[in-house]
Amino acid sequence: MNSAKSSVVVAENLTLAYKKNEPIIQNATLSIKMGDFVFITGKSGSGKSTFLKSMYGAIHPREGILNVCGINLRNVSTSNKNFLRKHLGVVFQDYKLIENWTIEKNVMLPLLIAGFSKDVCISQAHKLLNHVKLVHKADKYPLELSGGEQQRVAVARALAHNPVLILADEPTGNLDEYSSSVIWDLLKGANAQLGTTVITVTHKIPSLLRVNYRHFIIEDGGIDEVS
Ligand SMILES: Nc1ncnc2c1ncn2[C@@H]1O[C@H](COP(=O)(O)OP(=O)(O)O)[C@@H](O)[C@H]1O
Ligand SMILES: [Mg+2]
Image 1 (tube, rainbow, N blue to C red):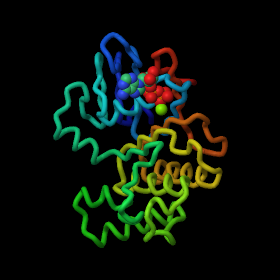
Image 2: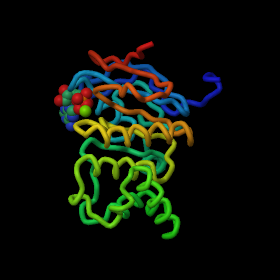
Image 3: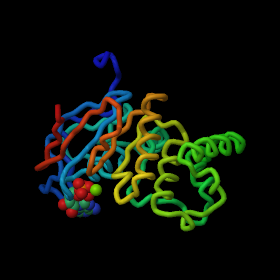
């Protein structure tokens, strides 16, 4: 039952701004539960990336409450922010892969940070690269791959440590249909099989994605759910 599920993200009267008195998001109230699959849409410049940034602690609330995985992000300590980031998987539109690491090592990154043994890191990276259909390119470097392939590596990396929450910023923006479908399948699979909460900004909700999803629109500083 929905009401019994715990919240992963709670925002109450949340205001986000880069400059004082110039709010990007104003008085937003919403709750995202464990296992939800959430799409966020909105015009360019409406504040979608800003809202995602706030959830991984890269911009702090000006007003109101923002709790992510039980961490209060209004006044967050460095140790709590580090704790939070270990439980998150973040996918950036520009991939942010480490160029002088093989793609296998890129996927291992969150596992290396978490201190897993080399064997666990390698087998988990292999499994994820298999899911994104890139296991045959494990030894290649990011710049030897196409944009779509690089983004598939970025999504595999974000999921490597089985995070509680995935935050993805237009993960399929500008990608070919094949790479887009591999990415949506992977996010859908993590949500369905592991209960991973997924929050993703997209310009277009994929029509073939057969999941029960929630949809929020950011407009004029507000975040409203489409029912
Ligand atoms: N680092 C920043 N400093 C100041 N303003 C910013 C910064 N990043 C984004 N903005 C502004 O905040 C607004 C929302 O940006 P953003 O969240 O990136 O929009 P979206 O992702 O919906 O396209 C825009 O007007 C943008 O110019
Ligand atoms: Mg954006």
